[in-house]
Image (tube, rainbow, N blue to C red):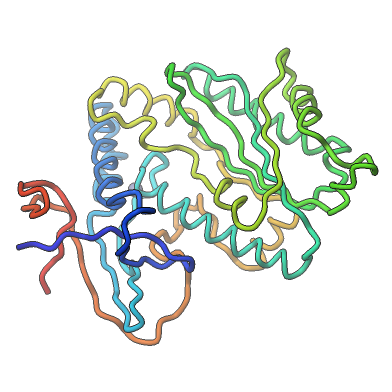
Length: 331
Ligand SMILES: [Zn+2]
């Protein structure tokens, strides 16, 4: 009988551990992501995007984990395609981004423990697929302008920004920006005219965006690591555009998102975030050479035991039928 890859999740240090408790786990992440990846490959093939299909096809098909004496299990060898619409890669990227941001913030806290953090979400009216590209441009230009306003800029020490595009229930696109702002504590001195209340943020955003409606803005204090988790989302969620039951819709959205994201930088770091990212020599997540295998770089004391899982058609003893899954390769 073949052994199936068990549910895996990241621990606090970014290592893969076997989840023995049920409850907080979302399910078999690897299998789910690989299934999404295959549906994407099929869409690329239908759309005649052969090169992209070829590159994306083997993403995550081979996974080599190493089990160490201390009980940790880490992914140590794999191929990831890094395609911008690949759900497998975007899952890896957001894990990596979360790890990096946590590192950056810990370093900022060491150097300047007085700094405070804000979590800011900037939105714009939902748009059609045809308008997605120019709506994103407008959103990013507006954001640059907003951060230059004197009242915003006065207390600002640095920012991290991630673009996210979701698909609304009516099929329209909802591009928006998640920002983590590091501000001087003086931002909260209400009497000192530094503090910007929710309403004022909305008005400033309306002005920067140059629109005739009041756009939705969400601003809140980011405490602990909550801010990091909320902001470290990777641009697109495969569940928004991969629909196993609707190939036409999948293809349409794949085209729209591919066009809108082409050549665009999706993440941005300024001020103290940028400086510390550079000092810690953190790799660029959008770089084509980024390593999506390891999340943390902590060394292990022993060589460990290798476990290899491959994606292929086999007999799944859990559902008692033949299916594609990750099966353990016999050593
Ligand atoms: Zn991939």
